[in-house]
Amino acid sequence: MASVPIPVTVLTGFLGAGKTTLLNRLLRGAAGKRYAVIVNEYGELGIDGALVIGAEEEVYELNNGCVCCKLRGDLLRVASNLVRRAGRFDGIVIETSGLADPAPVVQTFYFDDLLRQHTRLDSVICVADARHLPAQLRSQPEAGVQLAQADLVLLNKADLASAEMLFEAERAAHALNPTTELRRSAQGEIGLEHLLDRGAFDISRLRMASPGGGFGLGLGAAPAGPRSHVYRAADAGRHSQGLSSVSISFSRPLERSRFMPWLQRLVTERGADLLRAKGIVAFEGQDRRFVFQAVHMTVDSGLDRAWAEGEARESRLVFIGRHLDADELRSELAFCQVDQDVQVVQVDVVDQLATLETTA
Image (cartoon, rainbow, N blue to C red; front, top):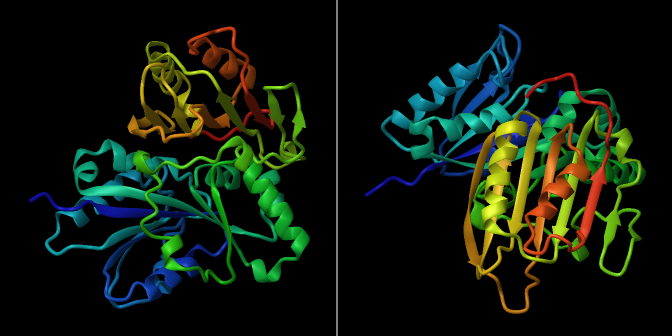
C-alpha cells in the first residue's frame, strides 16, 4: 500500500517577527507526534536550532546562506534523506531565514520526483510583527515577497500593538494578498488547528471569497455601473514595495480552448514575476469548477467539484507579483470569454509602483 505523503509546513516572515516562537508553540502542542525541523539562518554558527525545544524532534540547520538560493541544494539533500529514512515523521517544518523568498522552497517540493512522491506541501505561514508590518512593507522588499505567498498571515505581538496598529497591519496585508487568511497572536499562541493540515496547496480545497464576501477586500469600494464594481484598497500603494495584486471576476463562462493556452503562456513567459496566482473558473459546457494555483512557473490545476445548486457560476482570479499590468490581464482574460463583448464584472487593482530590484 502506498505511504501517505508527509505534510510540509513552511514558516516565513521578516526578521524578528517571531517565527521560532511560533515553531516552539507548534512543537509543544504536537504531543505524541514526531516532526523533522529544518532551520535556515545566515551565520556560520547556528543559533536558531539551539532555540527549538522538544525531545521528539530532529533539527537540521542550514547555515551561512539563504535557503532560497545558495542552500537550495542542501534543502533538497536533507529533505530527500528524511523521506528515505526508516520510521515515519508526522510532518516536516521548514523555518526560513528572515530574508528568504519562500517560493524556491515551495518549488523544491514540486520539482523533485522523490519529494513530490513522498511529501505534500501543506501551507506557507508568514509571521509578521503587527506593530511594524506597514513600515516593513514600505522599506523591505523581502517582507512583501514573504507575505504575498502566504496562505496564512499571523499578526504576532498583537498584545503589544494598539488597535490602530492592528487595523493598519491588517489593511496592508490584505491589500497586498487579498486571498490570505489573517489571524492575530501574542507570543505565537494560536490553536494548532489553524497551523496544521491546512491543505493550502490542495487544489480541491481551494477557497476564495465571493465579491460580496470580501474578495478584493472592498476597502473604499465605489460602484462603476450596474454590473461592474471596482475595488481599491486605500493607501495600498504605499505598502507593497512595487508588488501588486490584481483580482478579476467574470460573470460569463470562459472558453477552455482559449483559457488553457493563455494560462500556460502566463506562467512560462511571466512566471518569474508571478509570486502567486489562484483561480476558480467556470468553463462553457462544464458542470464542474476548474481550479488552479501557481507559484512562479509552477502551476497545479484540475477540475474540482460540481457547481452547487444556486451557486453563482462566475470565474474569480487573483494574481500577485511584480510588473503586473492590470489592463493587460483584463484584456487577455476578456478574450477568453465565450462572448468577448461582455464587460468584466470586477477588477481590483492594488499598487502599480516601480518594480522591485530583487529577483525570485
